[in-house]
Each structure stands twice: as C-alpha cells, then as structure tokens.
Amino acid sequence: MIRKIITYPFIAIGAMGCLFFGAYTGTLIPYPILFAVLSLALAVGAWYLSWYTPASKQKAAMEQTIQEQIQELKTDGYKIKVAFDDCELKEHHFTEERDRYNDRNVQAFNAWGGDPMKNVENVSVQQTVIIYTYTYPDTSETETFISPVIYKDRQSLLFHLSRQKETYIYVNRDYEEYYYFDLDFLSQPLA
Image (cartoon, rainbow, N blue to C red; front, side, top):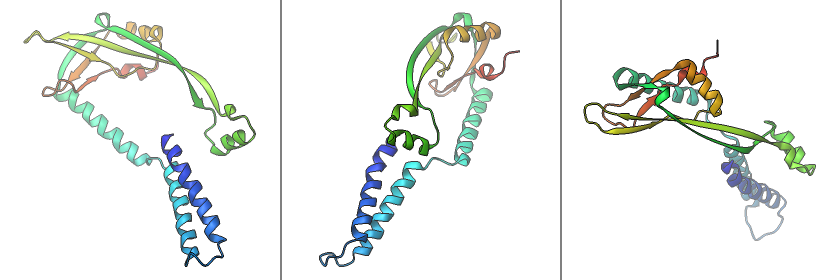
C-alpha cells in the first residue's frame, strides 16, 4: 500500500508533463517532444512499480527455501518435546479494514461515486501464540520459545491442542534463537 502512495504522485506528474509538453508550442524549450516522452516514461514506470508484485516463481522458491531450512532443523537440531499442558497461551484480537474487491476498477468507480467505504469491510482478526519455557537439563538454563502467530481464537486453539496433546520444537544447536515450533497439525482438517 505504501508503494502505491509513493508512486501515485509520480504517475500524476508524468501524466501532467506528457500533456503539457505534448501541447507545448513555445520556443523557450527546444525539444518539447523529448520532455513529453520522458514524462510518459515516468508515468508508465511509476504505474508499473505501483502494481508490480513478486512472481509466483519467486514465492515458490522462497517457500522451498523455508521448507528446506525446516527440514534441516528437524534432522540436525536439538529436539524438545512439548506438552501443551505446560504451555501458556496469549491472545490478541482486533478489527481491521480489508479490501472488499480485488478489482481496482470497482474500487475506483466506488471512490468516484462518492462512497469509498464500499471498498472496505471491517474484519475481526483473532491471533494467539503459544509460549513454552524449557530448562536445558545439562546447563539448567531456561529458554522461552514463542510459536508463530496462529490465526485462531483461544478456544478453537485449545480444542486443537487438547486433541494433539504434544508437539516438538527443533532448535539449531549453534544458534538457539533459530528454532521451529512444529504446529503442522493445525493445518490438517479435523477428523
């Protein structure tokens, strides 16, 4: 969103420059058509940057890298068994505005029609994290592990956790701040 806010003024400046220099008939500027073409290039370049998103190949490669790192932690990392009864749950919920329509033309028509609020809807977001404190048996040092954000309310998450009972945390042996809290069971459908 911030990228669009930054690029929209450049689109406007490029469009106005293209219109101005395209219709310029004075003698003060020697090559107005050159400035018109440069203004058009500015507008088109800014428009491209405002709508550019990483390709699905890049996203797939990034996902593949993440999965490889998780697999490496599972095979080479320190494996900690976690009983969910020993964990603490922290929850947070809030309401946010989300786009109702993915089509930018629909959003533009609503904004031009004087009702830009048709483009958004208020959505309640539920977030919970699992916190587990582990004491290493060889050093008696304690380490607190926090799961990634889980987009479920506390009661739904407790239901899933009561069915699973336990999971594992895989910790990098060299850098304890790198770990994987295994919650893959949350993405599986309930049987």
